[in-house]
Image 1 (tube, rainbow, N blue to C red):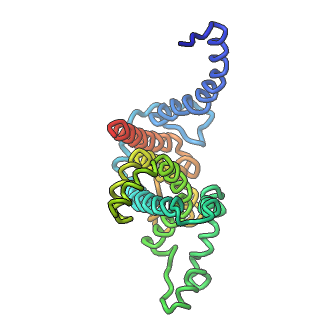
Image 2 (cartoon, rainbow, N blue to C red):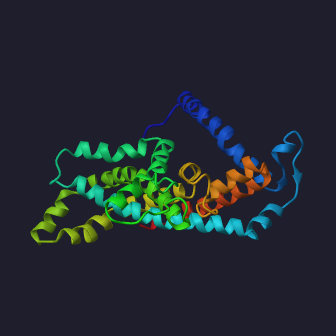
Image 3 (spheres, rainbow, N blue to C red):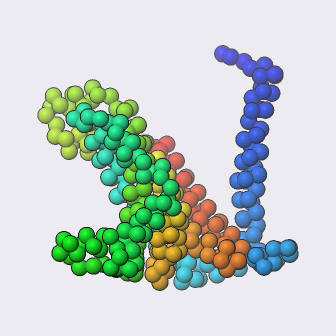
Length: 295
């Protein structure tokens, strides 16, 4: 058993202190301030005045607001479509790249991972050009017409606009999901698959009966992180649909917070929205931890 001396312990604490200071200044204190401001009337126009305590006024306004429930619904729809589909496709890509039949694995890993490390601003801008609100100028519409289909008002129709947001978010995150699943696949012994080959197990049964169950911890991790990430979607909505067009059909919790805090200037209401997001993400994190621990 190694016992650290007082000098070594002091050195450990000195190394840790800068991280704690940064955490306190940039995360802990702003979080406490957000909780406090959510109970106060405070706006950008009165930034030099002391916040006026109003209690749960903004929370009552949020939960009785049709717009709040609309953005909650939009965020839920985005999450329910983006997360499961991205994880399934990411798993299939990981299995394909990990297969012994695939050569030049590094090339495929890099090619599929590049979108994830690319700037979301650049990616969203490219997708906005592809699915242009001007139907005649849309690259995708031109391809559809050449194939004999009719043009689609991608960014002018509420359903199709959300589809575009979901598509760009999925395309962006697939590389990350694939890499995480590849790490999980590398932890599975080849002996298990060799034993399955002796029993003539089909590839589908290998995937569903061996691979998927052994990847449960990885799946739980990705489910939590991707869900949290989907609740924080902002850039594609802000760039592709100008923050929620058409008719607020693509507005999310984060764009709602941005509009209230920086466009309307009602920082108290924006802080209340941030607290609601914090509570939702905290609950999701606790659920993920319990599921992982039980597994």
